[in-house]
Length: 165
Image (cartoon, rainbow, N blue to C red; front, side, top):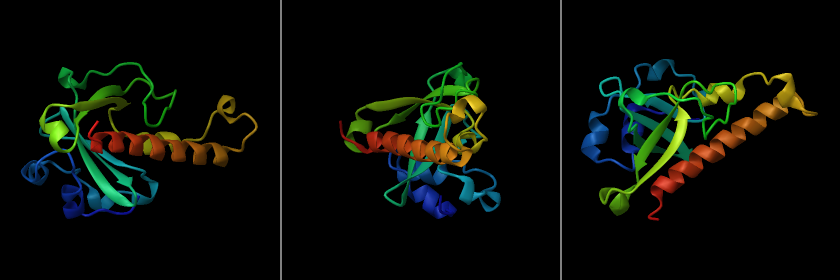
């Protein structure tokens, strides 16, 4: 992922007002972020724990999506994250819902998905594969396939938020 500034992040949001984007709490350590190891930037709002945000590259441009969890405290469940599909990191997955962009979102249309609560998907797909995951492929091929899958699935979610369906 290309490094992003605060201004780029705030202007990337597609499903909230400019005022909401200007007021959202950004991650604390943008300067310390290892952008080369990220496929998406996601974080929980430290001021409002039921809200979270994610910025995903779509067609080489950052697209931000405001998320919320309908469960108080973002109740975690044992499930597989729909983005990283890591079968070993199943304890910290929560349902997140995003309002669609534009008129559909203003009418109340939403899109939901199960995602790692800490948005550690980029780290999860880069972990060393276990022997049972390798099959006949070398570890770097498995990791490349996981990274490509994460990028495709998170981008597909953002495109669904952008669609008027």
